Length: 367
Ligand SMILES: Cc1cc2nc3c(=O)[nH]c(=O)nc-3n(C[C@H](O)[C@H](O)[C@H](O)COP(=O)(O)OP(=O)(O)OC[C@H]3O[C@@H](n4cnc5c(N)ncnc54)[C@H](O)[C@@H]3O)c2cc1C
Image (cartoon, rainbow, N blue to C red):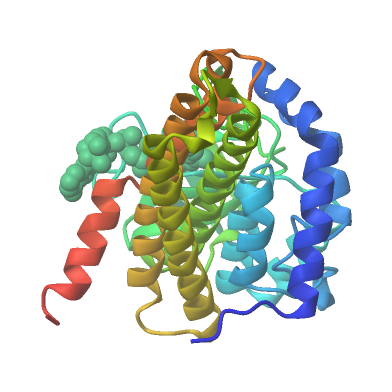
């Protein structure tokens, strides 16, 4: 399979890399405070980074999972909005797409996705949030936890249990009864603040349902098979940047009469970390192409990509601080933040155990 990048994709990579480097300090400052870099988000949406998957008819550049991976490898500030756009693009009616997607293209829209609850994480079966018919519309009632951007969102994608089964609704932020109740204090990806949010008898129009009542699992898999590309890419980006920075430092560091990169133990460590990052990047690329080509085994491939990106990203961000000794163990260096972000992304959007379950479900009957 040919994963060589086209000139357009290389150009996107160059542009988003330069943009991330220019704004790295600002994003880091927001992460320290657990604040959403709203101005940068808006600029990045207008420049086509956070809208890399949006077709031109809605104001985007018209890419797919490959472009999503390129952007996410550099920055995670668009992650939730990529997921929201993906859900609306693949499951929305023409009217829903027309209503919401152009607002993402100009940066005025921010999405939040409410699935998790205090008692519902990896399994959606025990969801307590309900949605019931009420006249011509619906009423949503429940409590969600770990919701990125709940306070900043202009539109919430809410997963709830209906009589018909799991159902997903688009709920505007000005709907009465939405109460963002607590800002959480996560260890990683702090540029996307996390909140608990209550939906207290929130009235929703009939045309707010994505696909149809009871089609929630379909929306979920369309969205989260895709989001694994973003999570995997962000972990790879953090791993690669940590390793590169550590090696550059170690090349100049003399211990006794050798540089650190002359020690065989360090050289082999670098070789292993680099190889694992390259291998995981190939899996990510294969998965992104599979999604864009509509392959049947895209879910298997995105799960393998996320699993291996977590392995490679965690190893690289951890070992970077070993290669750099005490120098890397200070908070003015980016290593610990990269580690915290990768550790967080290892769970968010589906833990490594769930990735293994998906992989085993696909391969055990086939082998
Ligand atoms: C930074 C961050 C951002 C998040 N953002 C959002 C968001 O915006 N919206 C949202 O709805 N949620 C969000 N989440 C929640 C996230 O999706 C859940 O944390 C995740 O689905 C895991 O659920 P849980 O934490 O409840 O773990 P649990 O489901 O309680 O699992 C606990 C442990 O058991 C393991 N486990 C669970 N089921 C199985 C199984 N069948 N087989 C083997 N092992 C299993 C898990 O892997 C884990 O190790 C976010 C989480 C984080 C960390």
